[in-house]
Amino acid sequence: MSKVVSVINLKGGVGKTTVTVALAEFLVVEHNLKVLVIDLDPQTNATVALIGEKEWGKRNKKGLTLFNLFKDHIDDTSTFDLEQSIVKKTSNLQGGLSNLHLLPSSLDFIQIQDRLINIGQTALMRPIDVLKKAVKDRLDDYDIVLIDCPPNLGIVTQNGLNISDSFLIPVIPNRLSTYGIPQILTSVKSFNRRTESNVQPLGVVISMFRSNVQNHTLTKNQLEAQAQEGKMPRIFKTIIPLASKVSDATDYELVGINTLKQKYGWSGSNSMEAFTNLTREFMQYVGL
Ligand SMILES: Nc1ncnc2c1ncn2[C@@H]1O[C@H](COP(=O)(O)OP(=O)(O)OP(=O)(O)O)[C@@H](O)[C@H]1O
Ligand SMILES: [Mg+2]
Image (cartoon, rainbow, N blue to C red; front, top):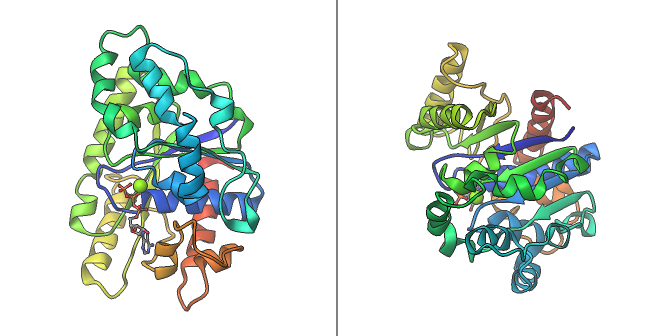
């Protein structure tokens, strides 16, 4: 059985996409697992990080993105082709990883988000079932499915939750980035009740950590204390540091990137080790 994990936060720019792409690459390269990344974010960042803008542009022109799936739901058409849309070799590591597949997003998605909610009220299929209906028979071809979500818990993210076993919350350890965590937990609980699902929190991943920022250490300690008291999901022991290598990692076009170390490591930072450890912890918690 495949394990499906949505990466969510109400807040933008907290490292959701970076963590999603890194986990996917480490799971494939260091653990030889088969991974599908579903990019549900209209910003299309995970897509561009994994296949580059040029390839995305070609595929977008041919209608081979999730935009078509959701547009079909609105227009009552059937243009979306799952098999054609899944990119079977992605990433700039090792000349492309054939065990890292991608269901790409599209910037065009942005225009239809609002219409999706409205049409959903009258359509035969619930709007939260659109993705499930399309991919459910394909998920078990993978060990892990990671879903990169937009920074909200709207209908598109709910489509991701609807096929997920659990969700991961990346945060920057400061007040503004952690403020919304209780709201996320409440919203997913309410989603579970409404849809008779059982999507569980996998944990909070602290990202972009700066040990020399007092606020970061304070917030990290607070989060850990709250988790101890059961007021917060588990906080991953592994902490992702703020590092220029990691910032560059989502740039597909960077030249000279062939190994995980070239992409995430060296340069005096401990980011490579952090992602290696994060991946191990992640596997332990999802039960792999
Ligand atoms: N550990 C890190 N060190 C340095 N820069 C990072 C790190 N993690 C992410 N970044 C950078 O921070 C920015 C935001 O990260 P990312 O795009 O992963 O966040 P996000 O939560 O997916 O954002 P959005 O909500 O817009 O989708 C990006 O420019 C990314 O390269
Ligand atoms: Mg993102």
